[in-house]
Structure formats: structure tokens, C-alpha cells
Image (cartoon, rainbow, N blue to C red; front, side):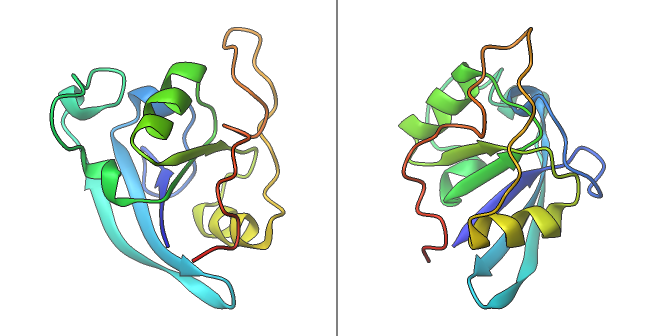
Length: 130
């Protein structure tokens, strides 16, 4: 399973997923350590907030996106691309991927200024699937 983690500094998990342009991409499966396989450093026009929805997007290849926060627009746009968006209070990318696979990822705190759902899409994202 491929999991992208929003990380503007490539060290910690970033909020505002729709405007994030940098992602760490992990190949992950239950029972083994996540392996970072790619770093995406997208141009501004490929942030989900700016993306025109025309053609493929680099995040289309992942199964899950983990971010510190994400609004309903980001979550919906990712779902329409068959990518599950999850928000978390965790700040360490590797720990977040491991916790996601274990089904124990700490949900993000709700934000008053964004109508995001606690924990992301609350869809059947296939935790621990792979």
C-alpha cells in the first residue's frame, strides 16, 4: 500500500492538506517497517487547492494521504480519485504510517475554522489492508 504524508519540511506532518505541495510517500504494509520511496515537491498549481482536476495527479497513485488537517473539499476531492484522506494529531510521519496500519492513528483535533471531520473521511479506508 502506498501512503503519502503531507510534510512541507519533509520532517513533520503538515496541516492544510489542500495547500500542501510536499509529500513523503511510503510503501507500507502491516508487519514491516514503512519504507520511504519518494518525495513529492509539487508546483503550486498541483496543490489540490489549485489543481484543475484535468488529467492525472501525482497523488493518484497512493491509497491514503495523511495530513495534520484537511477540509471537506480536500477529503472529497481525494475520495473522488480513490484516495482516502486521513487527518491526525501525530507529527512524526513514520509513526503516523505505523499507527494507521495498526488502526490506532490519533485523530486530529477539530478546527473551528474548517468543517473537517475528525479523523478524515471516516470512510472504509482499508486500515491494515495491503
